[in-house]
Image (spheres, rainbow, N blue to C red):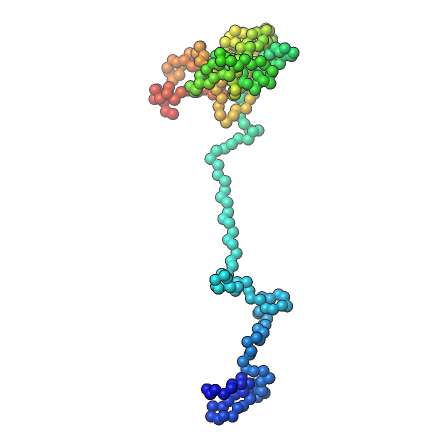
Length: 278
């Protein structure tokens, strides 16, 4: 090609130096040059109109926008749905409060003589306790005077061998329920105070024997219906001096009679010595 100035609106013949005007397929000369200028507006079609809802300049779709490093952003895909939760499985069946098991136990109404007024409550008559015990919270609610000194602390052995200590003592005049036969008034009672107890007030075997409550005057006792918790309860406090003769597996033995217990218990060592399966 020569260095002559090129006009996009004209076509030059190869065999001659004549210049012919550029014409379209109908034989009409072009009103505009064949090559568009660099500042020409882009062509808008029906397809591109779908990407531009406004009447302003055409905007490319979002997925074709350049990223920070000059690459196109990946096409967005909807996030997958979370997997369904597995069905709950429970290895332990928990009873509702309305369906909890109930048990019956014998209670003994007792009245504490106060300076201004008398207060009556129901204690647990426990043959497995060798002393009278009361919880600290109940003693405070009954406005009883607690003696907290070094000589009032005593160690008690529980049924599992654990040693617990009392924090004080209480001395009070008490009256037992009259029942239908006899009434005990002005009885001097002595209690050991503990920080917490499974039963807030327990009357031990010495007091029950002294008042002949379990044999001659059983009408003093009242029957109570109490719910059984998830853990079985044993009220054995101290080391009872008397035991019950019984026959277990064809062998005579002795047992501690605990009227405040929720079930019958046997030590694992006793069962292993006799070859009983556990």
